[in-house]
Length: 155
View 1 (cartoon, helix red, strand yellow):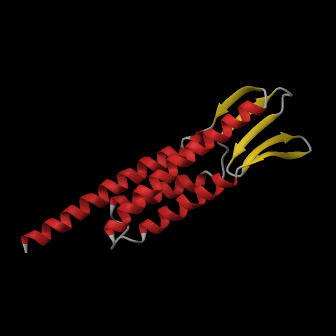
View 2 (cartoon, one colour; view 1 turned 30 degrees about the vertical axis):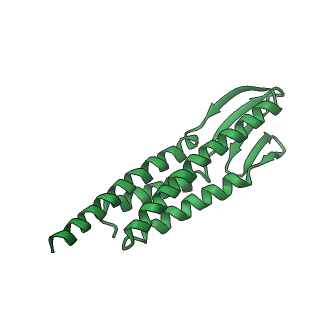
View 3 (tube, one colour; view 1 turned 135 degrees about the horizontal axis):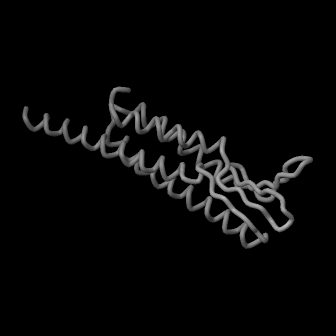
């Protein structure tokens, strides 16, 4: 049911989740003037001869993948509105957990290294944007469910 507005919200949430695989969350400069980049699979030091992995972030990768799959699966469950609402809530919790996990890895890095400049990139906000879109989809699904139940009362 692509014509439902909540389907568009869920599709946009999936796009935001997918974009997190392509853009860094945070860029920093350490005391040795190396550029550090935190993306979906870890924190890397960008050196002229190649990138050096400082800390792996496998849980972030897993949660981002789960939110992407969950958004896409939720779209195709349009006949099971109650399940669709539950999956939206679970996805919101996962996305907020993603933001917390990203911040956790960032704070761990700040404790380990002497960080000079730091810049949060737009991808840092993508989980929050996807969570808001999931909430809007939840409201649309709930509105549809109320409409269907009101028709059952009329009969």
